Amino acid sequence: MSEQLAVIFDTDIGSDIDDAVALAYLLSQPRCELLGITCASGSQRDRARLASAVCTAAGRPEVPIHCGPEPSLLRGVRQPHAPQAAVLERWPHRADFPPATAVEWLRQTIRARPGEVWLLSVGPLTNIGLLFASDPEIPSLLAGYALMGGRFLPGEAPGGHTEWNIMCDPEAAAIAFNRGPAGTLAVGLDVTLRCQLEAAEVRRRFAAAGGPLAAVLAMAEVWFAERPVITFHDPLAAACLFAPQLCTWRHGTVRVDLRSDLVPALTHFAAAPDGRHQVAATVDSAAFFDHYFGVTGG
Image (cartoon, rainbow, N blue to C red; front, top):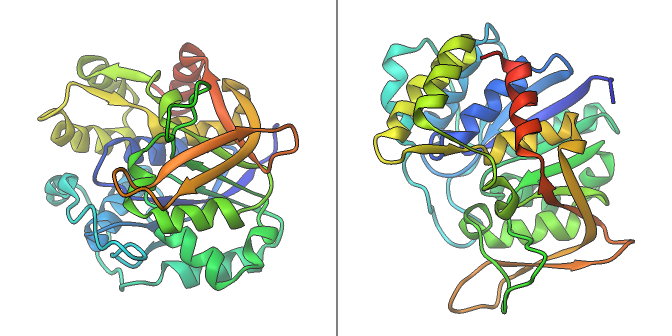
């Protein structure tokens, strides 16, 4: 692929640092027309301000940013805080974000450009579930849909697998998989865990890159206070829009189990050549990091 892609980024930026790392990639990717950002999970205003800080550091303060509803569809707020907001006083950003505008903005933007927009979601799927449920035609109007979420190990564990983005709003995740477009790309935890960098390497490469990664590095220091590595979960999903060959893919059907009393939101994958979903099976992690830093610098 060499053409530009129009992308909307749905994110819970401010919790795990990898959302901001993915946003820096999208802002730096010359083939990405970033139409806007929608925020999911709790502390919506802080998440929108963090997205704005990264956009401003990239010289793109005009990128539209919208807040979604804070509670999940049925289970309240699993992520009430955005810890990385602690750095905001040091980074210019917008602060004028009215509540709960994301779903209507998504609907209008996708309808204005039928067949052109890629939707990329890397957090709890509340906005996506509400969008697909409230306007069932939307999936057919997308150019494509990709998400980071779930676990799809080749050797299916008894009862399936669980993953944070799915657990935060399992009902919304079930809607996203059940009603999403054919060809939906799912990059699961079992693959993204193979793409990690230690703090020292992150500091060296992000500092060398500058631009949006300078702001992300400041946010990463909040993350490093408790963890020694960054796992590039969301950046891998973002990169697969532009370089799908970084992963190998399995066709099949994903099901989200809402019935388990012990571990909610288990994801199940059944391989089938004509399945409506494609899940990442393997990743060339060295090629991924070459691609990521080839786009962002560092």
